[in-house]
Image (cartoon, rainbow, N blue to C red; front, top):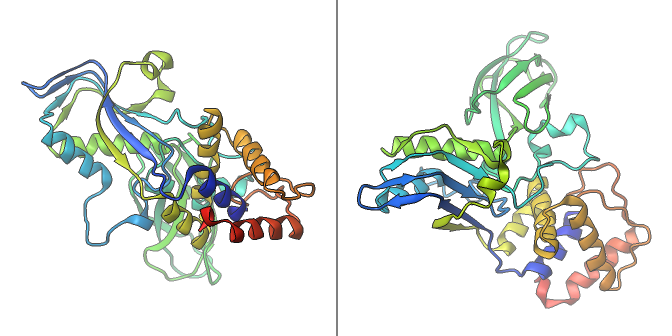
Length: 334
């Protein structure tokens, strides 16, 4: 399924395509006093690689939000009389496809695509385990997810990671069950972020404060606001634009690591690119029509997401072979 999605994205968007994430503000920027009298927005561009571990330089200790804080400080900003607000409106609010199962979506591989994704939309739980059959303890959760209510029922036993985290998008309540090996220290289990865009806004808020820039209000998202249109249609001015790595590099990691989140981003971005919606269902229709126009027989093809996590996906060997043949024959894919 990832080949189906990434192959269409490469030709439709181009190998050199880059996602753009913008920092902008509304209101007035008093450049003499260094005060923004308004809100600072992180406007998501559907980039799956923002803060991703795949593109992290191990020698670089700074996070992307810390770099943004330094850039804003260089522009003379000392104070924000407003809030850091995340705008993920490029994609639909519903992050996960309807065919994904409850046992998947709380785990890192079930993280949904958000218009403003950050840190691979995941966190890591570090467990300590004792004797076989005993209840484990959570040593720490990195990065810290503010307001997360993590209920741990994981026990020690077995030989691998058989822990499952349950929880839905936008809910801070998580339940972890199953087993991890006995007598381990800082054993890692990864879960999906409840709201990646809010997490990104909180991270930038903290980075700005740590750099000496004061902010008068708490961070939030456009989705949370009572009057979305007032903020979504605000006359914003761009302060900085961050660009992702090129699409060919993103596709490389999507397929090499079999990354569900990356594939779902590409599917939704094609829906935005072609229809302006950012909807999963529109992306599926676009991809199916794309391959049909290439002469691929899609009569036995049922597509329910972009990555293959849905148990309702069906693809025949004929369809798969024809898609691979089309990819091999056309230079745009290479």
